[in-house]
Image (cartoon, rainbow, N blue to C red; front, side, top):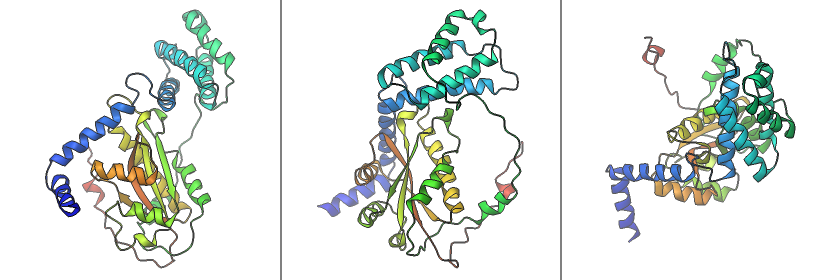
Length: 319
């Protein structure tokens, strides 16, 4: 019976388009159940919305010539929702960042008290009740020229032959700390990294992924990058995977920078398999798996695929 079931499953998902339709329905069901399009279903949705709102203020302040007293209605909503959030969850670093951002806004708009006295009072009430942490607003940057990056980026290859040296969790934590500076939509940073070291669990998870045959047994630890659908809103169902992919690339380069080899393992799987992976990995229903990453140390003379690249003129189109 199980053999027949497996054949029907393969026929449905791999040899017809019907499985793709069901996958899209599953995508949208997860998205609309958890995103903050209408209201906040969770603390995470609250925080994603507040981050989106205060980042609008930061972006306005970073314009070449910031418009005088811009964004009054958005700021009004930011203050109201922040106070509602504070009532429910108390003060935290996010609210302190919002307070810093609003402080910067008032500093940049010295006549705001006269221009909108009601909103000015709202902002002052919030700022006085939440201590600023100096992490919101704007900062000054200068152009960075780093020619060594070209060689570094080109030196990374996917490794499929790891040695037995243990990858310390601290190295992974260092790489994640670097990777989190990847750009994300409105700075919401909806990504997660799940780390697995238990060999039985790693083996079980790899059995649910189709691209590790012949080397999976050499993987020292397994990472699963996910994106939290609660951090996204209307028209952003694809953004989940864009943000997750941007973060994943940063993570791969960060792992390379600390001497850890990695191999991306794609999770383009039927939704039925995704559900099994989530159960086996202890991942929330609201998270969308982006990719598995097998990691490990490798010897100084390790053979990797050449992976010839296209000419740049096949990629860059100047209009």
